[in-house]
Amino acid sequence: MTDIKKGLGGVVADETAISKVNPETNSLLYRGYPVQELAATQPFEAVAYLLWHGELPTDEQLAEFRATERANRSLPAEVKEAIDRLPLDSHPMDEVRTAVSVIGAIETAGITNVLDAAGTPSENLERSLKLFAVLPAIVSYGQRRRRGQEIVESRDDLDYAANFLWVTFGEEPDAVVVDAFNRSMILYAEHSFNASTFTARVITSTLSDIYSAVVGAIGALKGPLHGGANEAVMHIFDEIGTASEVSAWLDTALAEKRKIMGFGHRVYKRGDSRVPTMKAALDTLVEHYDRPDVAELYETLEDEFVSRKGIYPNLDYPSGPAYNLIGYDTLTFTPLFIAARVTGWTAHIIEQQASNALIRPLSAYNGVDERHIEGYVPDTAAVEVQERPEEAAG
Image (cartoon, rainbow, N blue to C red; front, side, top):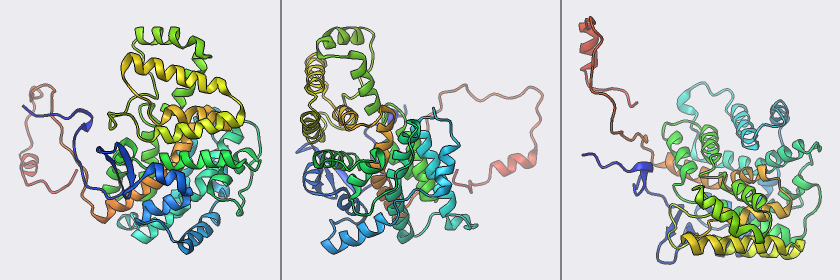
């Protein structure tokens, strides 16, 4: 009997040097560095550089990297026009997916040989950095458009995190908010062969281009069992209302066998190692905005759920209320995830290209046995063709 690994659980599909969960310390490592150390000490630009190049940048390398990133922050007119043509009630994930697709069409225009579409490693590093640079403009404009606000142009005197907040809200953010936001971006940047990253690698394995792979990854991230969970956490908070209502709400939710988003993880068995860092960032925001009610609701729900089910929070649990306090609409949470994870996706795309094999798993057929159309007479020539050795990969 075929041993089927539903959801590819436990299957090791390939090697990667980009990240791993260290089971001994229950820590997520980016190129060997514990992510909590990176979040505490590095700007997001340095972590992006690390994921793409394998080492943290020197001061000179970081300065050059930042100069290139800041030169590519503006939203192209064609991309803005494409977003403006979408209905205002389009999901923001669809906006971002469309914007990246338009950028890909522009950047790869004129490439007529399909074998050239994948690009060279240096071309894809350049494309990765450009996507990284422009995504804040895409995500922020989506939120501002839905609020009836005009676009805010990027500034080249602010680092990545501060500029992201600037183009979203049109105000220079306080340092505590920049720090919390920067940490969240680092924590979301990469996580091994998760669903969206694996999607990007599958698309890349066909020798498709980097933009197609990122668009596919965005589609995978949209699902609530992956990236949409941080949105779902805020919907739960809104539904509960106050800490005093947690117990009754949880009684009903568990009786209805509802999935409580923001808890549990396919990889971590002793709790998501990223949560303490993000919870600390949330605590600074609670104090900054004087919102003890948020902390009370957060901690009450966590305590109740863990005591009842023994399932611990994942990164989406503290990031949802953190983004809400900063001022992001709930629908914008998962696009923020894109802006962070594009660094990890593109690192994996480049790694896949460097040692590529078409990803083509088998399946166990469980349909009806072979049967035939009554009165059908087979074409002898066609049968001979079918019996020849397989020549195509599909």
